Image 1: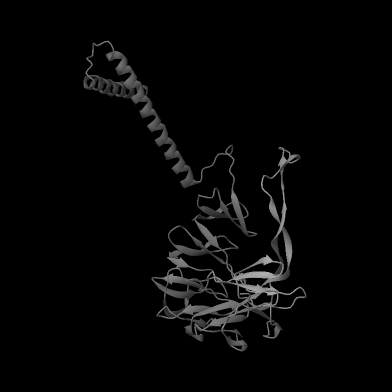
Image 2: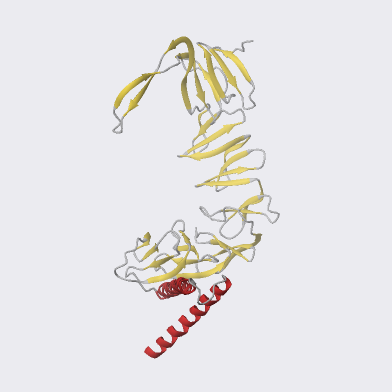
Length: 395
């Protein structure tokens, strides 16, 4: 072994010497020149250091690959591990944000590796959707073991006992065993959201990909795919036919009839925004509880002719005031206008009297007081009108 190392070193130094000699010839220096030997030593030393660095880098890369492949760790090397609790017997871990994760059981044994991301199921379903970076599959959140190995280009979470998958460009619904339960020959649309059951129903598009409908757990169409959009909120559906919207329950009973309005549900209240930017509130049974909902009211100020010099406070590093400097230019004093500004739909305002009466509908994008009882009301097309406190136009 010693002899082999000596022979290798002599061979390496011989190669380096030859390279140094070649460089001296290229640079026009002869072997017996004044700087020839020095140049050869410098070149040889630099090249030797380069070879050593390359060897060290290759060795480190080899051992890193070996450690990652066979899970070799060192006790004196602390790691900051990111964890996500899944169940008593399964935890998802990631050694760093940029590395792929893995699942361990309660005994710290790795049950699944090479995981890029996970998505937990809804309700009482137990299979978690995960990706290995190329394909998607499912593993059991209670055992941490793979239930359906990654074989789908796209897959969605389990809900109501079913999950949708992209099987060669077609959307199909499978059970926890991977068996296809629903296959309605629906093509996959890149970027299309949904394909998840809620309360026994799922929004699915038609074959032309321009309308949506609703299917049940057997794949039967409950609402034919002839609607612009269908939104699910618990046991209620908001259905848009492209012109009007309606609210119905999952038994297809009408809660609020079709109207030219936009509906959404928040905190057990149905909100509606009408075409004139007014808003209404209904309970979950469709009973009107507020026919003119106001989201915000504020007072309006206007500049007066009275001028005042302001001051600028100066602070030290501890946040204490050390001095005050008077401004060079005076500013107009502000006063409160007689009427107030209210907001109905977000971004749409109207005038309100001091006693809370509605003076104008919420038809303006901005309202600015220019006097004690004079208001500049502008719409979104920058068209403005001057109104007095009675809502009358001032010419």
